Length: 248
Image (cartoon, rainbow, N blue to C red):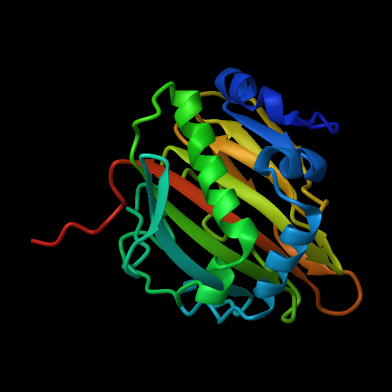
């Protein structure tokens, strides 16, 4: 696995890079240009990560993860919030937490009203449609606000290990890193040995993934001196349907 040396993608090369490699990395200035969003709007959105409840579903016994969850549909150039629903993944995609309905606390309405929020979801879905060459796609969107902290000495951004999410596209925004080390991102070819590793250390830098083509993970974080944290926004797009437990 080789280390990525600041090989950032410009916002006008996203489609071509995703098509070639299955993923791309944008620095904050490219994200701002891609979203047609100001730095101030993103900083305003980032303040909402200070009010996340604990994730009570961690099967490794950890207390290091806080999160909120929301679901949306983007269709006909319109974004609609859907009623709050459980987050569910099959065991094939999440061996640790798959197979159970996880009812996380919803993303707050005050967060959804932030001007950057809609710009992020709409631009991501619009880009995915462009990559697919079809502007009529119905995108089922799940958004997760995560905070991983190091109060207990270590935090695991991906306790399930290297994985796919069972969707079409994934966006991982690095909202903030504070007083931590580690948290290296690793991206692997889903059908081969090649991969790259790098650290998203700039606030509002971004990793975009074609979930069918690559596997990803982030290594554990540790405090530098006192307890710190790693805040991310993870947004997934799935064509036509949400992942749901089929009940007989």
